Image (cartoon, rainbow, N blue to C red; front, side):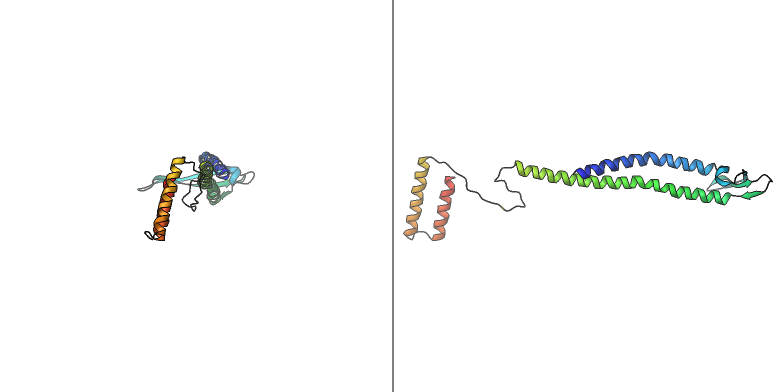
Length: 194
């Protein structure tokens, strides 16, 4: 049960941290993807130049504009780095997907922790019931054990029982009842005493 509770706590903490971290990480990735810098794409001494294409309209996408990035050195030589930017953006996105695994794994830990806690609780309750139940209580999965108890009876009851047992014995000896009938009547007389 302790391990289950521990997994529940760790899983819940991981889930909360993951759910807080995912939006922050996602926002950071989008900001990096939308705003490239010269330090990321260009060599020392080069500047980043952004060239926007003409605005186009399509029915499903609406208005959009293509953007190309160039690194320009001191002599004015331009080197296109749009592909490098897109590749880096895709790589960052894939790396950030790992952050989505934290809440998923944390949820799995919580589920396992819940089941372990429940199973531990169930067995501890069962053991507790076993120790608090009377000795003659029988659980359904255990064989029934009959124990003899000490019975104190009044002298009158004992005399009645002795007389009844004598009558049953005399009937058997006279051949009025069979051996099976004798055993049954004797058992009934003794059960009546208890």
